[in-house]
Image 1 (cartoon, helix red, strand yellow):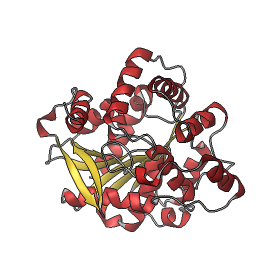
Image 2 (cartoon, one colour; image 1 turned 180 degrees about the horizontal axis):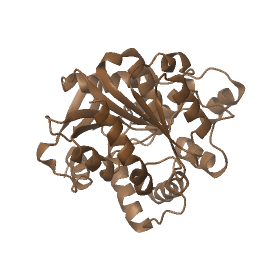
Image 3 (spheres, one colour; image 1 turned 90 degrees about the horizontal axis):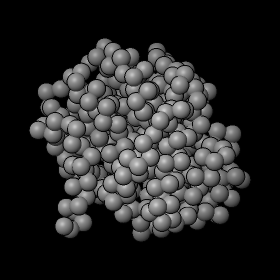
Length: 321
């Protein structure tokens, strides 16, 4: 089996719970960058574009979330951000230098990135252009929220509604950046070459921090699925370049204040990556937005969180369809 065939096999292996009769997939050209997407269909349903966070492949979206959307009349469309998954990588730029970039970060000097969050926003627009969608709903989390804040502000006529999860308008700094073990794990992923076993163990540790506290995890099953994602893409350094793109960006306050699209902001009170206060502040900047605080939520949309947010999420989307 060649590399491309194996990659497609991994996608299918992680999608078996869905009715894939209406599923389509392919690549779109975004200003010379190939972006891989999956359209779960069906075409007659209301489209909703989902934009992932830092280092997140499209396979990271919970199957339960995709099913909830489809079961309620929506058409989920997901894609790999540039430099991750099956989308084009920027390995020719190399892994950013750890010491030099952290010196710049801690001293407030400007960082230079291989691409910008605005470039990444254009990738999402390329996907909906390719699918000939005049309007769509939009759901994004974490870095995906940072990407889509500009996407919505610059293309407000393209979006019926906007769901912003676990994100903020502020560029991360010393005050808002992760602390303790999470900070160390992110640094390890960003700047240290690790074996597959080390990467699997690191992923599990990060999931335990970012998932709902006390959630029982089948560690063997988790590592099995994590290995599928590692095998799906050989791009190990895209995470670092995406992180530098986040840190090189400016605060998006002006763009966020200009958003007029109906918006629902969801944020966990226990989020160790994006402070709850910053999520609330971002919601306050968007006139007329709804804010949904989730008491048990850390950073990820796992099963306990989805059980809380699914009804208000669907109600919001249907109201704005």
